[in-house]
Image 1: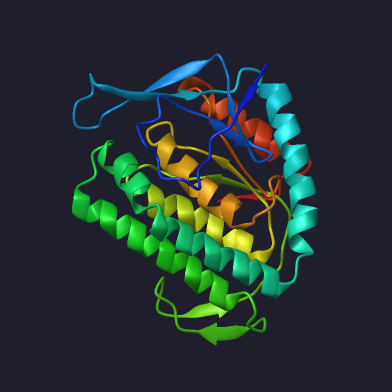
Image 2 (image 1 turned 30 degrees about the vertical axis):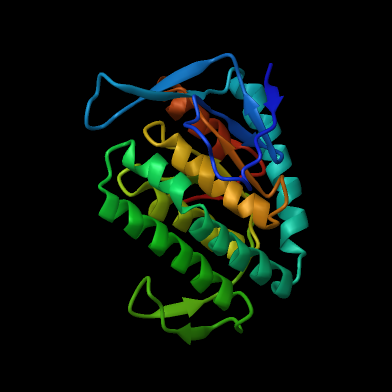
Length: 241
């Protein structure tokens, strides 16, 4: 059984979060099953815990159903609305710099690389936002690559998994692109950096992304293969990133 909690992410965090919650249908959810996260500089030092899914089959089936509903809602929004929401998400990333510095530095990133993650993530969101209204087939300049061809075709819910070594940049790429295209996203956090994913998802939701369009869940490390198989085999899943 999952318990909903209320966190007000629009305000700066006053202290470290002891348990990183799921974000399901726009609400912070903490389960009784907790998994530890350790410092990558001192592997005996626990930073915090994250709440893990307790009923994999049932929880993931519900997450996928809700993600499909979120896709239907998000994909029908106008390009103007999606652009404004993504631009607001980029601003949220910048305004919550202290939250991200905390979450990045405590897993071992240097201050310089943490700052780079924050700046790059915000810039990437803005780039995707600019491209939402461009005609399909447009060749455009990009900070992400030498040449970019824009083709938008929302395909449904996207399952996103990102590594922890540049957690903000890499997780953000797996969210911004499908959201810009009109897809919904179901994000499984890295078990090594769940707090970064939590703060990032809040930036998007507080900007106006619908609650079912972007959801975050955490899984116990030993259950990740099983959880991933359940998601990608679900009838609503379209692709993995």
